[in-house]
Image 1 (cartoon, rainbow, N blue to C red):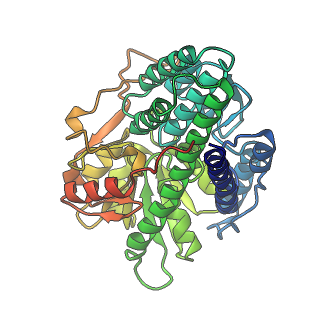
Image 2: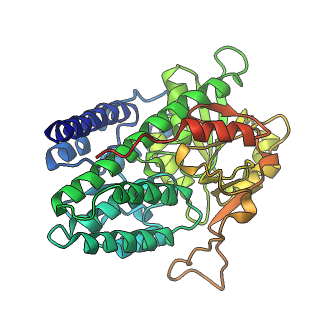
Length: 428
């Protein structure tokens, strides 16, 4: 028994060390928003205090662009992570106020986290699964002194509440299933502190697995995208829709991870970044993060995408997948379907698909639950705000995953990617 406890402690220490190393590497890359929530105040201070400097800014086209990047980086220096643990509560960076100002929301209950998600205080993407996992940990931690059955009831209630917060975000369901599975493997009579520690280690391990997955995804995507470069020295022009940065990905970005890998390989590039209404997460959050990293970019209105394809060079399109079905259909930020339909045959459309969003149990996009967002207070009405687009597999050139780029037909490749991404046993 003592040997087993020692092994568990060693495994937890390994993941904490790995977390610090990966976070430091990611922080050196993006330097502003990608610090992982840690299990102690010491580790949190270490990660949340990562320096804002990291990537040497790329040469901007003119002095105005340089000034914009400097101003954006100054605002970005106020925060490091989309959320963090603070004892038995979770502090969420309110993304609705970025980049002009930063504010936080402190949540002590799953209902408060779910409300923050629904309101758009924290946007879509894989980070929602990581947030959901840590929210369940907080629910259990607040009842350390209660009997096991009460802690488990709180965990199930928290999971049920979080599942309804954004029904089209597959990462939430993936994370909750993993946390619940870890809980079910424990005994019926478990000390409250030990119960909390086991689930916290599992949530940390889930976040670390996502970081490694996103990093591998970025490298795989960079290889296929780099091949689109024209004459030696010419810049790649990528059309990126939605926020694919660390604010949506967690410790490591998704589609911006591809951009980061290209930058690390000294591939010159320029990003066309859609505004991504109605939340404008592209024009606000995406542009903010690219500017802080020194990546040359230009924001375009969603309605100007057709004009862009006709009048400017676009070498490839990068979308953020939020749910990938067995046949390759996917949910993505609103506007993704329009871009996919308008892209000329010569411009490939790639979707960045982390392991947490691939769901072989969902046959096609028609099986994904619908989602509509509540209009912001004061918005002119009546309004209809769909939450996401469903992009048919036929419109995609490939799915960028950690195991490589999957090309159509997608079913076999997705099955292999799912098998390769199956997580190890829960960390105790």
